[in-house]
Image (cartoon, rainbow, N blue to C red; front, side, top):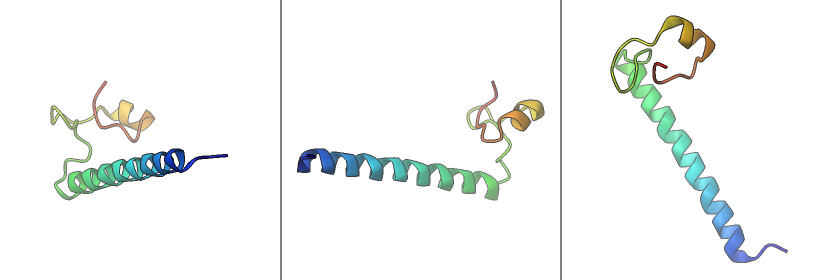
Amino acid sequence: MVDATESTSSFSDLIDAIESDLNDVDAAMERLETSRYFNDEVTGAPLQTQFLVSNPLARRNP
């Protein structure tokens, strides 16, 4: 049997994960709107094409 504390903790963890995903989506939308989507998030350098092809969700150069 699952107690109320464990259930609340699971629910809270799920909400945290969803909020994290939504923050990632917001950041991606901002990068798209400012034409920085294919650039390294930290350095601003363009993402390497071959790396981006093999890792389409990449946000940083290797």
